Length: 327
Image 1 (tube, rainbow, N blue to C red):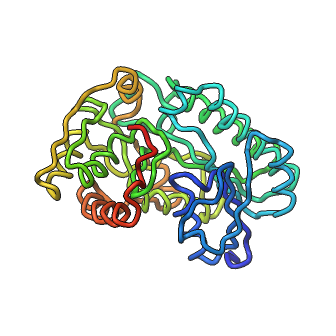
Image 2: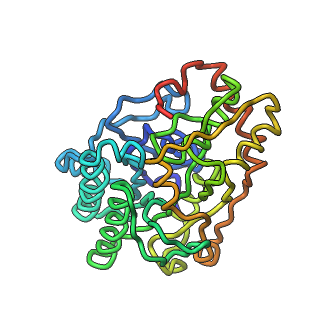
Image 3: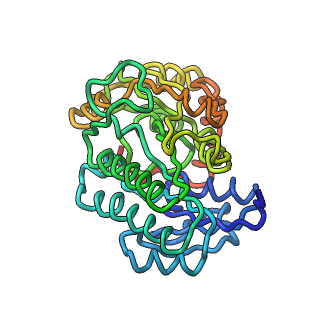
């Protein structure tokens, strides 16, 4: 693979994953072009990187940018996440469903070689087995989940019909030392953030709430490894990827191991709790392991040891870094 000459477009690059993905791709020698509806973030990782204003709901703008850049690969990150999506379901549909369709059409029209799609555990719904495999029926309970199911199916249609190399991962809740995007799993991150800056946090879930989670370095590696895997090794387009599945209480205990004076309580919000209860408790990622060698490297305790110093550093540099997120 001629990494150094491949041009890559990233949609939704201003979100939680984007800037870190830009850095990872540049370190691999790719020609990276991030895009987002929002202005370029004030982030040292993006210094010297071209930034392309793009609203993925604007089909003409999407087609024009893809035609101008002629990327060999697109990472499609642009999305409205679960909690925010339930507040604005119409916008969620427009961004997540229409936006994905616009990207797929632009790939078809301009012969883009590969589109990497970020899906989610929110594609699943209530009544799940304890361990959820790739082909468990998809019955989402949120507009976010509904649109991600549609994105998976649309991408697989374009793969069959037009030969697009469409591949993607179903992410657990992602945790990193960066501003989250309004997901229902944000309670996990804010145990760390408010534990550091305030010494107290009331999570919006029950203590026994359990969903799959993943630390961002593993999430980035999953995207990169899947995108670089030989197509002939892949038996499917969409893969579960898993790391660890702690209860909310176990996360609180892990935070207190490093911050012994922190107080973490649980005040369950009925609406968000219902969403969490509809999601898997654990994911089976056997297919990803077998097809492209996927294996997470961070467990809960290793993440805690790495994440808390990073949050301290971020808050020292930018005390208001997390103030714009409702949690």
